[in-house]
Image 1 (cartoon, rainbow, N blue to C red):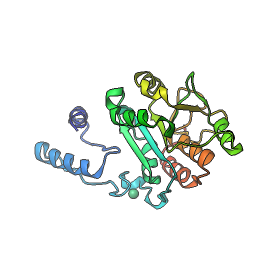
Image 2: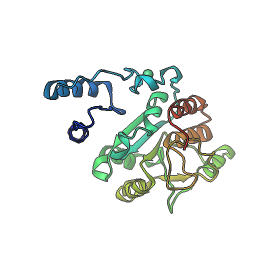
Image 3: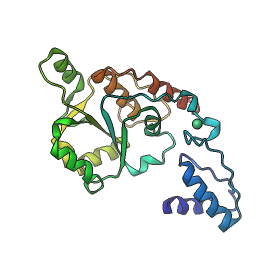
Image 4: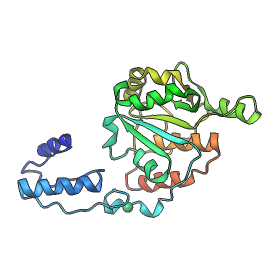
Length: 237
Ligand SMILES: [Zn+2]
């Protein structure tokens, strides 16, 4: 919250009295609205949907049809992603019933989940391309052939720019103890509104949808519909 207000103080110079509130919750808007009105006499009218929390003009509620996956999706989200307007985790939170988002960067920020993983490592897998990762397609094939049992109940994803995700991977050695997957045959990247520095890398939503549909045969079309709905509000790049 302090960060938000500090940033706003910079943005609300006299030359630029318009304030854009991007991707924050309705509760935060009420709070900040009260402060701005009190301190600066600025009247900020609410223009955000109270359900999806996107601006009313870009409300996506009519496309929200949550699905119930058989496993829990855990997102380790870098702090700089949380406020990014084009981040896809908010869409996942609207479209999935079993999702937990944990914000942070280093191991201290993830102590609780790290302890749970240490207790039952066979129940957790991580999606992150690394030296130790194997193709998820191979694992699924082994399950389907009955050569390996499927024991996973939680799949962890890192939500950050590629560079920051790599940093998080190195700062969190507890992740290295878990089964780690990369994609050998990923679907085409549909999320064109955000450039990625790594070729063929998918948005977090697309990665989750791919894992759920490949490994657990979940129909993720509702998630991809949300992505398309959101995407229509951004110009193609
Ligand atoms: Zn809405």
